[in-house]
Length: 62
Image 1: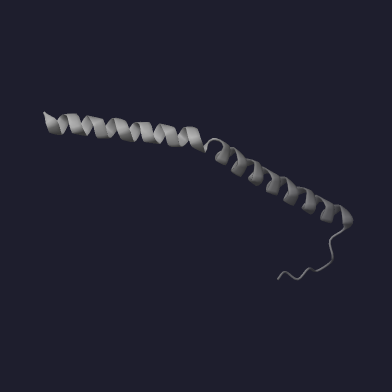
Image 2: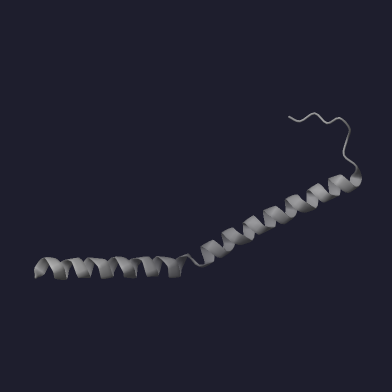
């Protein structure tokens, strides 16, 4: 808990609220965009994995 020497003014309180809401909205947007783009990322990872497995199978079979 922080003990203040003096209470914040209305302007300081408003600025604090604006900064907090802006940060929270940016974090929410980032999480949304991350979840939105997860399917293509998973597809690329699976494709790479399948490619590497196939290359190893070819090397082992020869």
